[in-house]
Length: 70
Image 1 (cartoon, rainbow, N blue to C red):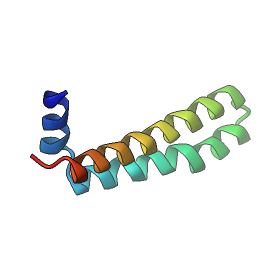
Image 2 (cartoon, one colour):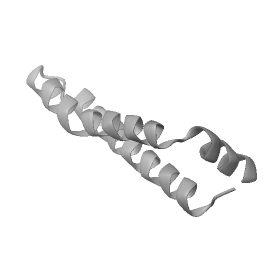
Image 3 (cartoon, helix red, strand yellow):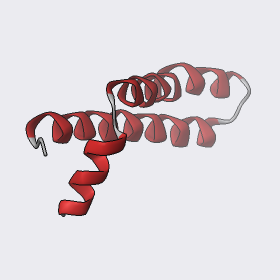
């Protein structure tokens, strides 16, 4: 567990959080609409879940970085 916290603390900066969060928002809200217009409903649902996962991982990592300083 310590190595995971050390990894998050070392590599997950505010810029990395912004990058993951923006990609997550794009994947969850913008890209599925484009895929639905092309008739790819299954891919649209998968893309939405991947985007939500990115957002979740970004929020968890920034919380770990904030509340567990090393």
